[in-house]
Length: 629
Figure 1 (cartoon, rainbow, N blue to C red):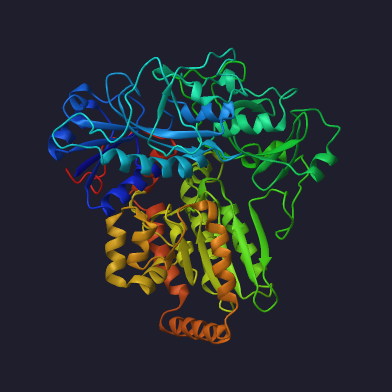
Figure 2 (figure 1 turned 135 degrees about the vertical axis):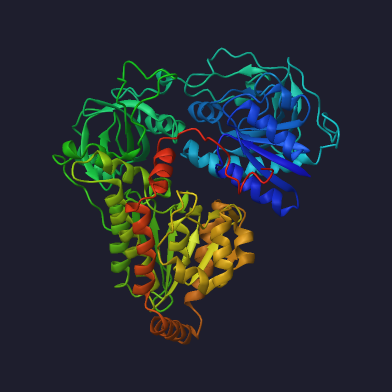
């Protein structure tokens, strides 16, 4: 089929469906939802069989949905309507949720349901994490099932065992009922308010009920009375956007990236009042709760709002840079005690980096997690990773697993952090870019020169730009089926890229294929990346079981009788490559090109970065995505 993906942005879900549908042989083009006239023109040009709306913030034009089958992916169960579906589900504490594929009509989320897929809500997961993992997986299944119902030339789905909808009925899914099937039952009478925390009967949502955007009044934290779990749940439900409006050091800001503190930390500050900021660690500030404490990793300052007067939806805050809390409040946090933790430690103590070891002496696997928020790496984080890799060299292991983060392996340099440098006296975005890319190169160099053990990059989540090439610095690269890679830089203002990619990529796929890949600028599924030689293996359907499988395979790598021979071959190859062309030369050549991006006359990188971090509306769809143009 000819399928037009219509989306507010080319986000992770859209990219995943883009890859899956193309792999099935469909002709897929993309149009970003810029204006009705632009979408109508795209439909005329492409003549799609189906328009698939993956992520929209407004209605589809009647001129489109009245003439072409338009299927909308909605992150909610049958009967749920509205833009804050996941927010409400987390807020209520629902145990199960789902994704529906609805036909577009005049009212949003009100059309006929073509398919749906349920999933269990992962305890403690943030909205962004659920969206990238459970929602995306369920959406793929539901979309594929919906497309099986498509009849060319018809605006109606074929019947495949689905029951008709009834506005007086409630869609329910008892345990054991296969996904994609629903039964209809009279709705239960509820005394409880579904907007209140603790309401868990998501099946009681009546089809056609509009659930409004969740207001900050509902998200607001009451520090003297809210428990740690309640606060974490509120921040989780607002993760990514819009955050929870609050205040730190009497300055209004939005809170993101929260983690529970350990019992040992709580005991130290047991006499402090709830809401008090107590200490700092890495990017985060520690804040007391009524029954414990939480680490707040990232915040966004509000320049035109106060906690008692939330920013109106039509008047967004001036300051939209989400940054490490410790950086935003650097002056205030210097007076706080720092509470560092060892890299190698027991469970329960949160920090961005953690190292563990598995297996017996002589066949031991080292495991390095670096959970950087949204996969973005600031200069500070790059240097922390570099130092951790240097310390890891002192450990007697046979295999080192670079596990990255559970949500992202890495997305390269931290563009928000770089943008913020423009507000610092004596600094600039160009200087911050230069420092960060050099620090990122330092981390990649540590991996490339670690020749006395096998290195494995295990991609639990997506990887982009420099994060892809940080992974490719390892000897072996694995991912699961849900991972998307964007191994290119050009979309960010024609950046050339560094991280030794001109060495790592050609040694895997050759010079010609490397040049073609970097020009293509398209996302790759893990399976596609394996077929092209970027990845060595793809196993597991999702992140849930991937870590256990990686450990199993890594222990097997550490145990063979010929490991010493394999390491000797690795060292010899590195020496041969160095003699042919030193790594330092690759770095100099790459950074010469990057220097032009940062300091040259062409401002494309700075413009693209500014538009990215401030979420400026798209003016057009990139031509490599909109093949109909």
